[in-house]
Image 1 (cartoon, rainbow, N blue to C red):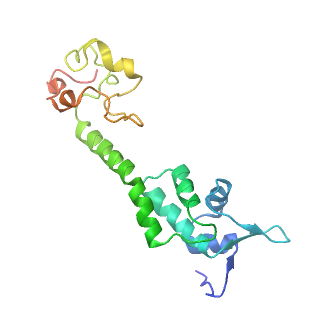
Image 2: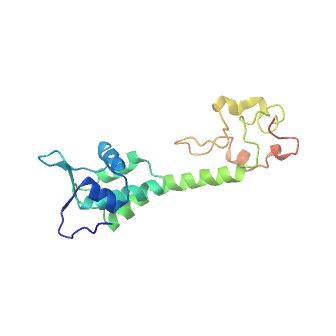
Length: 179
């Protein structure tokens, strides 16, 4: 890897890619989505300020924990232009994202815990699931395995009230298997 001089204030797209470990095409994509910015030289070559390296790292870490690019872009837009995200910025932004991340964790835990259960209105065993899904009420919520699919913005997962969700699943009987 090429070592960057500390006095170097601008990076080419190749230098930024090499140093960040992100493909040039990904950097172009980030730029097209407004996540990073460059200036153009007289020869129409991109030049990125050094702080873009930290912004790319911020983007990659945010993506790694499941933050959508649109939310990352909105978060970066709260920072003054040309300033790198600081530890305080990361703490503030991660606190903003905490609720959404906690909900994703709960969804994944439900998915893990329900993986061996009847998947509800997607298992093709409607006749055997009359106790867990009378009259195919989960089908009214939409296609697919409704108990495992999380609704965006919903305060509770589909599949009934909190008491219904915590009740023993009558579908655990040996007779309830996917056809």
